[in-house]
Length: 262
View 1: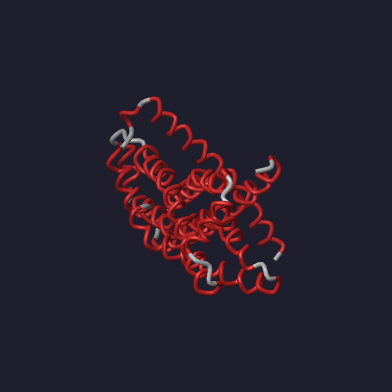
View 2: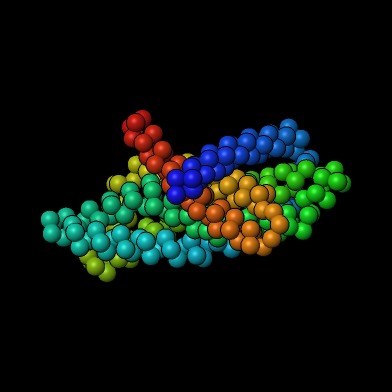
């Protein structure tokens, strides 16, 4: 047991170092694209934007709407004890716009698009197509990783905005059903609770979460070797690691925003 624990700790350390190295390699590749825009694979970026962004809107909207319903319902039950039902609007606005909207969006994208990135790149590795790319002079980072990172960094803020809107709509619907708050009252209270940074604190996190998800997923895909069993294990691991990293990053953002008074 001691040996297995030690080996696990060493493996985690090695994986962290490899992840940092892969992040640096991705940053270098993105810098090269900025310096030489002709290397940018625009069709691939739009393809991944469609797959990771446009096709994800229905599930993101549904989950955010249901989360807004649940928050408003639970808040109404608790605040009714103190005669403060109207503050449900404030609770829904702050929780959805600052935290839950973008966090749930990132988690869904990590499970949906992150796993797809790992599986796609892993299948390419198993078929030895990465070696073929290097043979004909193509950089696998430019072909496989950069378009996915850029596409996800573009679409995740948009998906986060959709989630915010649908979460507020869900909260408004439940407030009207459970508390009798009219849409006009809900919008009026929402305007009073809407500070300039309430929405901004959520959307500012989106590109960082996107970079974490895309980089982690592509890194796991590039590690695939040998068999489909290894592909399945690394696909599962990429989702777990991406979600864990997103939650850690969200905690760091929360501490930072609290420290600077936002």
